[in-house]
Amino acid sequence: MSARTSHGISRYTSAEKGFTLIELLVVIAIIGLLSSVILGSLNSARKKGRDARRLADVKQLQVALELYYSNQTTPAYPSALSALVTDGDISAVPTDPSTGSNYNYTAYTVSSVIASYCIGAVTEATVPSPSDSCTVPSGASPSTEPTGTFRVGP
Image (cartoon, rainbow, N blue to C red; front, side, top):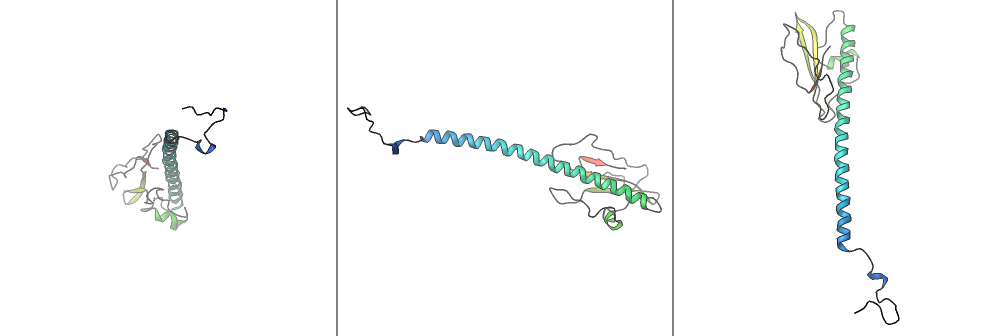
């Protein structure tokens, strides 16, 4: 049977026009695929942003430690990072942006003076070069280095 009458006028009304179920499913699948790609790239950008914050925090701590060292009558580093706040070198000790925990800090004592330090941070995505500039002085206590994929010392 033909969709047209003998006068050439269509029997279908405008209410019957629209998208088929297959067309709608294809469009929904394409939108889902695009959104998953975008969310994946945003997650990578977030990791890089947190890593940039970690590196900036470690550099800030390194500068504050050097200020602390130069302000002491007998040059020495602090046994804990909280001494930097007490001394006025920084306003607050920065913490990891993901976990909120403190960065790994180890002070090395040589001949009863804290002569060196090492700060460690765990990065998620990128590890800048050099990733490790910590060296334990000979005869230092403790003899272990802090954990972290990025570590700095004096």
